[in-house]
Amino acid sequence: MSKNLSIPILLTENLHIAVEGTEVVHGLNLTVGSGEVHAIMGPNGSGKSTLVNTLMGHPKYRVTNGELRFANCDLLKLSPDERARKGLFLAFQYPKEIAGVSLRSFLFAAYNAQMTVRYPKRKKISPIKFKTFLEAKMAELSMDPSFAERFVNQGFSGGEKKKTEILQLSVLQPTLALLDETDSGLDIDALKIVADGVNRMRSPDFSAVIVTHYARLLEYIDPDHVHVMVRGTIVESGGKELAMRLEKEGYERYGAGEGRMPMDSGQLTMDN
Image (cartoon, rainbow, N blue to C red; front, side):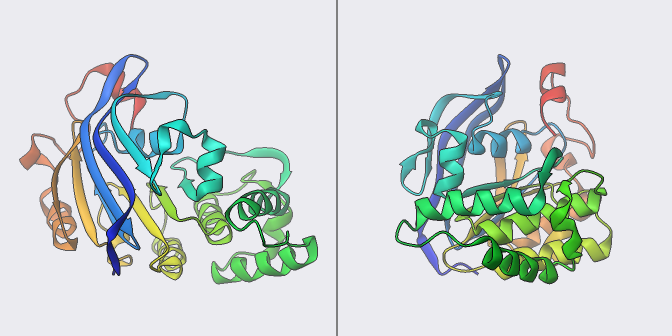
């Protein structure tokens, strides 16, 4: 559980987000303290993925109103690469393939680029030491070390792609991780491995926002706070018991069924 509850690492106030002219998030307020893990649950089309992609700086999503601060900086003034170097990380719902770039080369470049900014007095890690470091991280996730020499996500199964996202999380050691439905499509063994990877990161210096439809991931990751997001805003917050209730009852009490909500077609195609 969090030990630094009074120190916000992420602050959103009255946040409004539009996608190609259609407002998807409306007046959202969320505060994440240092060391806290927050889960955001909600039906398809509720704006969850829109929120985390906006936090990471995806150009498709435009903040039209409100305040957005990360580590006491105006996040809206930072480019996506500046946000990453500052310690923000996004695990994608649908991880991309990068042809021609090995996973080891990709992580080696990203690690040195980020660590030299966060810890300017620290020397860059050598390729040999990084190889040892990376293989230790892969062992924790039960990943074959040969995957490090394959092109990023190319030919990987869905579960392998999700494990690779958690490997990146473990290697890059962000201050705040945004996990966008990392549990989707995973069998129970892969789900446990992903959850163990997140749990190993937990400390007063690590926070996370976990976006999910279902409570099964939260059986293995104990969140400090659970939020229900419906129609682009948070409508209820609570503890883990809220997630368990949603698992039994669904979202109908908020005017939403188990599937898509009755939104306009623009929203339905933009956000999961």
